[in-house]
Structure formats: C-alpha cells, structure tokens
Length: 271
Image 1 (spheres, rainbow, N blue to C red):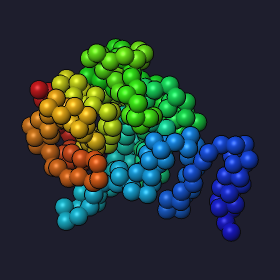
Image 2 (cartoon, rainbow, N blue to C red):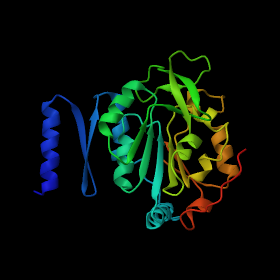
Image 3 (cartoon, rainbow, N blue to C red):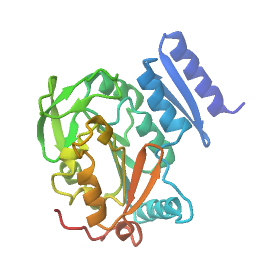
Image 4 (cartoon, rainbow, N blue to C red):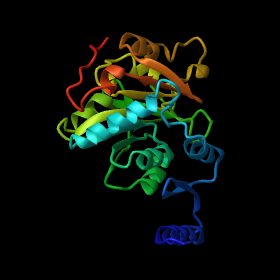
C-alpha cells in the first residue's frame, strides 16, 4: 500500500470517527474526500460530478476534449493559469472535480447560500481556489436568495416576487477584472444557477464570451413559457459557438477562442 493510500485512509478514518459524513473518490492517481450532509441533494450532486462526470468535456468525433486539453496546456506553457469560474458551486463537488481534472487551474467558486458555502469552505480551502459568498448576476449589487423546497441544490436567486434573504451579487466581469490578464486566461465558465441564467444573459455578454468553454444547466422546466434559457441560446448563436451536450448540461464551445495561442483572443461584442 502506497504512502498516498495510507494517508488517505488515515484521514478518512479520522473524519468518520469525528462523526462527519464523507464520500471518497479516486480520480486518476489522486484521492478526493468530500464532506456532505447525507441528504438526497448532496449525494446527488456528488454522484453527478464523480460518478457521471457531468463536467467532463465531451470528445466524440469533433475532439472537443482534445482541443480543450491542448488549450489548457498552451496557457500553462505561456506561464499563465487557466481560469475556471464555477457559478453555483454548492458544497464544492464540482470544484473538487475541476481541481483534480485541471490541477494547474485557478478556480473561482461562487455560492450564495450560507449553509452550502460553509460546506464549500470546508471542502475547498486551498490556495488555488478563490471562494466567493455571492450570487452571480449581470451586475454587482444584491439579490434575494429563496428556498422553493427542493433542498440545498435548488436554492434560487432573483427579486421577482421571491421571499428570502439578501445576498451579494457579483458579475463575471468583476471576477475577471480582479484576475490579472497577465497571470490568468479564462478557460471554463460553469453555470448551474437555478434559473438566474435568464437575468445573466440579459446583460452584457463580453465577459462571458471570453471563456472558450461555457457549461450550463438550463432551467426552462422551472417556469414553462418564461423563456429562461432564451438569452443563453441567443448568446450561443450570435457568438458563433459549437453546441454539444452531456447529461443535463450544455457545452457552448468557442473555437474562435479555443484554437490559437494563449492570450490575444478576440471577443465578440456585447448584445
């Protein structure tokens, strides 16, 4: 038994003795331990990330994953850090998956719910993960967080008749402004924000389009006829991106940004 395995087992035993609920996964040659609450929501999120690998970029004949991996390596070779922004980070399962899949990336993890954020901080306190207790939106400000009764993976933000408590709201543009272009290169923008994509894509697309890969779970099912995902599909179409899906998620891939040297990529104009 290797020292890595022994160390992982020792840490796992300590956590179990302390009464914590944890899940343990091996990804490649690394072990990931995830604290959770034992709820259907938490276990579902972990399963989607590690068993179903829902954020793995599809490959198929178009070789999307191959091109994305080449982009990732080209950014590192240029002396920069690929930047992943995880909006709706929940308890941190997706953040941990990204951190193992892309170990040289800088990850900004954005989560507005205080209970989720507490667990996110426990799971993801490393120097390459920048935690933000906030919702994501088209501009900086405040919004309301509400619980429609679907558990910790179904909290919603927005001011349209919602009852809840105020949380800070941050734009993707502000996140990028705080990450020096000399040190960081946008790579993946992940959006699982329970319908808030309608407001997000009603704003400027400039910062969103800087990411070669946008991964989004659309939520039209929440309010049929409300056209929640319409703004995203307009963004996807008008910025000339490729469409591919995996499970619940849509991957919107910009070859204009993905193919080429790290840095110096053009951006589409905002709507």
